[in-house]
Image (cartoon, rainbow, N blue to C red; front, side, top):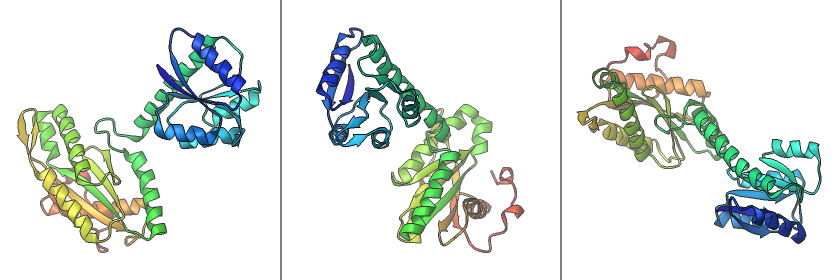
Length: 313
């Protein structure tokens, strides 16, 4: 049974919509009827709905602003606009504003409304899947490079606005190539998944862990009170990833080299912050790995650093 929230201030139109859905025998609909946006928000906060049928003319909302408010408050629920006007321009604008469909009240057979609801739900799921694939690493489920950069931009802005420091960590696994060479790429992929799980366990839910590609990861840590907090997290990570892994019934040991910089102490743009963290990470590699280093102002320029492939295994 599909749970539908019907937001309609006309009792006549609401009963008509409910009767139309009741005639559809292929699928059952559990319809909750409210007459105001405020009531709709209250129900949405307490109950999970599969779709919303929305009238654009309500006592506390009118026109496309009604749709935009609903869309902003509940971006994951498909919305179908039910209008009393057959207006092609408005219909296009409604879809551009986030509606999955635009139907005129009382027109069409039960099949049309029922099919529109089902298609809206499936289209919304497809959209969410495409969004996920565009923003998250498919192997580990971590944030990918694209979403990481977006989050870093916002984290830097919050850091400046709230006058709270932000930490940026760049991590590169030690001896990962040896795992791929000896156990194969499937084992390497399995190892990366477990590494991702361990990294999540080392930080707070509000922190961002991202996979940049290969065996390179980044972490954004906001709202820490002292640099010592970053030391605690870095030690937790090196200890966790320094603990042997059981991969394909074989015990495998790796490690991790971590470079750390803090913003706005290191008051530069994104790419410079990443280069500074990379330079610090390279120094950790040179020390033998499974350690961490903070960015210092006399780190060698990134252009003088060896390529990643020359890091010690």
